[in-house]
Structure formats: structure tokens, C-alpha cells
Image (tube, rainbow, N blue to C red; front, side):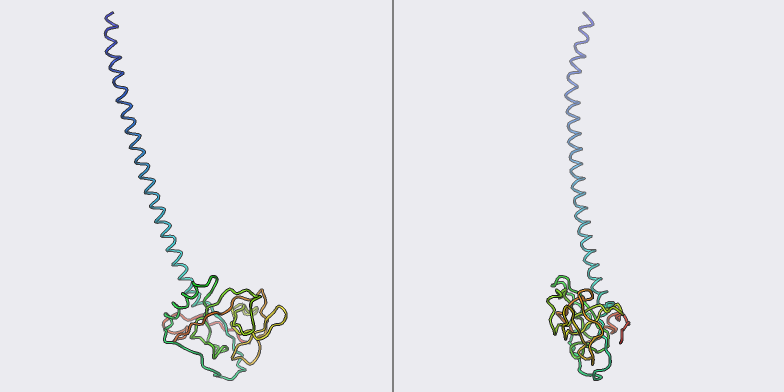
Length: 223
């Protein structure tokens, strides 16, 4: 009987300890849940910042690409020298090369699929434009091209873009000529070599090779 009397308080004490342990476990779970929520929120903030940084980098790359396109891409106006030398003087503007580039870049962003091109000092498209101009081209539908359009196409021999005016159509091909050239180009424009149609010309007071910008590629194709 004494044994039984002593065991009862122990059992009673054990029953009192159980709720305390359960309460402590609940508080720990709540703290862990709160910590997990804070970690999740921090991860979301980091992911949002990473996306913002990624967007800024992409925008920077796009701007650098535009600048490189203007500095390195040559809209080749090949002059054959048969037209009158110095025939016509191309327009200029009060814009320096840097300002003209900004205007051309703004125009490019307004038209999907457009590109910027500079011109080598061949004079074949005078008096419409010369090396002081920046050309903005659109990705026009080949079937929408018309006589009189100024277009760019990749010359099969030189592997570089040529910018001349369409003067004739022969079936599904077009024949172009530089406004200041004395003869037609020696290749047709086809669906395969057509690149774009000029829809804007931004004039500057400085040529693309001025001290304000790196000169374009010196490669010039001549017939």
C-alpha cells in the first residue's frame, strides 16, 4: 500500500509536465514557420532584384548593339564613277553625329524590326544622302516594294549591304541604281538577298568617320 501511495504523486507530476512540453513544441513550430516565411520573402525580393538587374543588362546590351550597328554596319553605296563627279550636294543638319544617332535610335525603337545603317563616302546616292546621314530601315514585305523605294540588299560578291534605289521590276526581281551612278547595279534584288527598305534618313553635320565617333568599316566594294 505504501508503494501505491508513493506512485500516485509521480503520475500526477508526469501528467502536469506533458502540457508544458506540448506548449513549448508549438511555440518552436510557430517560430520556425515565421522564419521560413521571412526567408521566402527575402528570396522573393532577391529574385525581383535579379530580374530588374537582368532587364537593365538587356537594355544596356540593346543600346550597345545599336551603337555598334551604326559604327560597324556599312550601308554600301557603291559608286561607279560614271555619273558626273560631285553631282549634287547631300543635305546636312545642325545635329552633331551623337545627337543624330540618338534621334535615329529613337526612330528605330518605334518600328519593329528596323535597323540603323551608316554610309561609306562613295557618293553614289547623292544628292539624297552621303556619309553624313544615318539610315533607318524597316523589314518591309518584299511584295510591297515599289519603284522609287530606297532599299538595302546583300551583294553576293562582296557580302555587304548595298543601299540603292529601285528603278525597274523584272518579274519577281528588282533592279536598282545609285542616284549618282551612271549605270544600273550588276545584280538583281531577290527575296533571298533583300534586307530592308529605308523609311527615315537622319542628317548630321558630321560624317560617320568624324572625331566624335569611331569610323565605320573602311571596306568599300567597287565594280
